[in-house]
Image 1 (tube, one colour):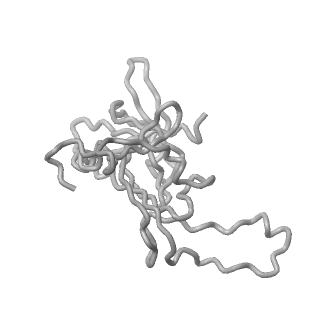
Image 2 (cartoon, rainbow, N blue to C red):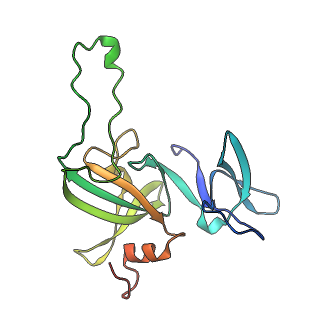
Image 3 (tube, rainbow, N blue to C red):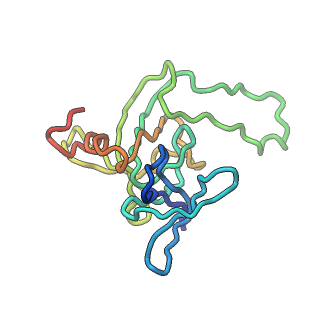
Length: 193
């Protein structure tokens, strides 16, 4: 149904100060008492942990990755910039390509930030959410002075990485940085850009 059924949520820490990384990513589980946990793939060294999580912070992985190849989840705040030109290719045209090599495409460069020398065409910041099985970015539209949304797939290639001419970067999430969330969506008249 989705590219991957990986979820992310904040870990419940009882009687212990949370570490810098307080998020679990993995498969969502529910015990016989109704408590939610994630089989955390981030435990490291091929190990997994079963971490209890706050269900109200749950977000599904979109399958898309930013320019740093970081997974994008529901609730993430992302910056998407369209650009033209700049130093975007280290790849030189191949000479004498055999038929066997034609199937092997070189890995294309993707960007989290606009590359040096490129001209920025547009830029928006917004929050990722899913509706009807489609992931969107919700953002404040300066022209209409209202919230707007666009499908996220418009900014990505078939490999689920940023499309050519797009720089995509996860800059936070709505649970860790409420000020960034409020500023991104202009949720208060007191919020400054």
